[in-house]
Length: 326
Image (cartoon, rainbow, N blue to C red):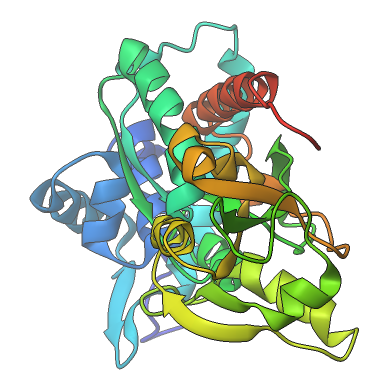
């Protein structure tokens, strides 16, 4: 029609194919996914100026802004969304077509963000990073705490690559694997005046408690599980103190007549068990297994797959070292 703007040619036409490559397509996918130049650069393991240059090149090649500024931040254009979907399919097809078991971790790069509590991170990350550093020294990691209830949202929005912890979320777009089973136990001082070796339900309710849940802990799932179980019985704990980390709970219990609930794995640590009695809860709670969770968009990514295999190996090692009563 006269006066109308000529539509840009579709992805893959001859005049554009000569000006793009697979790396540029991967940058397009990441820019659209992250909706942020700096985050996209961080995810791809390149500098922000390099990603800005890539965005400028994409805009020139496709004759489209790709990302536009709005009141709520940068957003992809309709054409960019269409192009990114086509590019994602093409990259996946090429990746499957060249899979021959020759993935080289030494060439892998990128930044992986993981949400986990301090306790879970201290169990999993030392072994994982030690293994990663043996063969993939260009990978970077950020381990952060946060509200585990929002982990599915953060994974879907691309703010995280992994979440580790207790979850009840099971949806088609999220994948998960068991890292290790976990139970909740109660700590009491070895010098407790009323409790020695056995803990009744009445004692659990009557005694004062140290509870993990002061700022900056946004949602202590372990405490919520216990409170919910007690609420079903029409009772609640006598909370004397709230703390921001579980190691403080153990220290306060060791020098007082207070009780605290902690993951069994932490309670079996030598420093804790030497100063505290480790007692089973006098009531049942739901399973509190720790799982690794990731979004479907990364399920077929080669580096992501390789990392998940390392997580699987670490999980097997952790489970094999599990000691104490289940």
